[in-house]
View 1: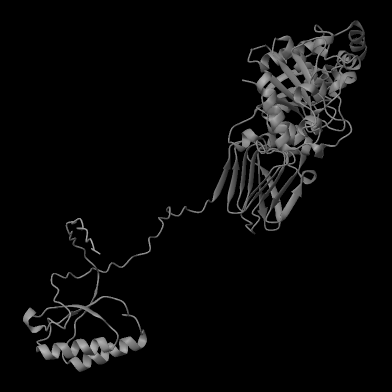
View 2: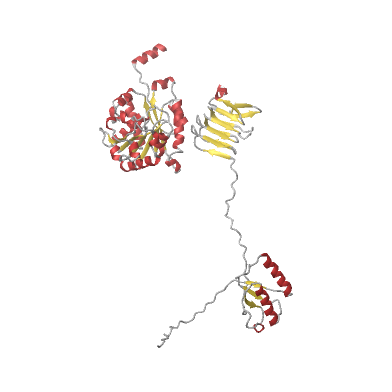
Amino acid sequence: MAKVLVVTSGKGGVGKTTSTAAMGAALAQAGKKVVVIDFDVGLRNLDLVMGAERRVVFDLINVVQGIAKLPQALIRDKRLDNLSLLPASQTKDKDALTEEGVGRVINELRQSFDWVLCDSPAGIERGAMLAMRFADTAVIVTNPEVSSVRDSDRIIGMLDSKTVKAEKGERVEKHILLTRYDAARAARGDMLGIDDVLEILATPLLGIIPESQDVLRASNVGSPVTLNNPVCTPARAYTDATRRLLGETVPMIVPSERKGLMSLLRGRRAA
Amino acid sequence: MDIVNPEPTRQPIRFRGRSYVAFVFSPAAPIVGWLELLDTTLARSPGFFVGKPVVLDLSALDLSPSAISHLVRSIEAREIRILGIEGVDAERLSPQLPPLVTGGRTLQVQQVQPVEPKKPPPKPPQTSLLLDSPVRSGQSIVFPDGDVTVLGSVSSGAEIVAGGSIHVYGTLRGRAMAGVNGNSAARIYCQRIEAELLAIDGYYQTADELDASLRSRPVQAWLDRETMRVTPLN
């Protein structure tokens, strides 16, 4: 049974695209057949993060409108051949997407893949609605700050009412992925705590991804962080989150500040 | 030329019984008066009996054969055809008259009651609304008929509008508006207050106006004439 997973958040810049790429690659590394779809029509990014921007010929809109066939538009990853990308169009806008067309594309992808990951655009408009419309599972990417948490809450409400599953009376499985978690700021109390976030959202936690230069570095070279440097902390956090998604029980590691010599010295001076 | 008359193949004749429904006239003495009554009926709905089978029941009368023929002619003059006569001896009927019929049964006219669709027993109007999941940002719960109870939290950016009181067994972070139909006795209860706005019967208080010492505590809000009071619950 293929699973359709939407990566969504409401708010922009929280790490949806990075997380889609990282989890897509991690699922592929676990041996699953994976396709990642960019729903951010007009502002596509997933192709860049996946390092496939030079190979885009057809896109999601072309397939939805019937101009291209699905196999023509799918781009196979060079590093993992069970990972594919369906890019968004940069020139069209989101109104070119139709519910019927998206449904058809997703159904077709369900036939040949184990996981269909939909990278939602920010906001709650048409693109975001259609990205979540056919989802079985949702990963809500949240930063530990009030604006992001409130937007996530809004999105959870929509997942419970506007998806095909919700309309049939079933439930979309929902998970919180806490990203850009800064242990130092958390220690200073500058950020919402993990408990606060979970208490507000009342949804199970899938993983905590620390704020890290490794994520930026991976994006810049066009590689999902889980492929670029599989042993770095964020890559491990993403891999753990993916294993939880597959039903494994993996202990949750809360990133903590590494106490270097400098901070120890600084701490002593302050005392 | 010989005309060959082919012998037709003889089919046995079949008889079948069949019953029909007919009107029955039962004239009563005096005949003249009865005929006048018939005339007034016909004046109201002329042609009502045209083409309808009619049987004459003479059991209530003792008429001579000539009187019977006169009566039948009088009725036929009113364009009503007599199908048969019942309730007299056969010998009183001349061959020109309609035949004698017997064995008639009165038709029970059943008053057809329009079948009323069975209505489900009327539900008592709902006076409270129970929500067992958190109310998310952007959701608006409007229940003007009574109390609203929320078992989870009410998120920032969500709102509850109730005709009666509002009970929140989680954290109230959004807006709560109770007693919207002018019910000044409505109250707002919550396990933990972080509300953006509290309102009862049009009187409201924003988060800024809320006493800082009450924050994150279980409280109730109620209306003291025209002032909203927020007091801790423990």
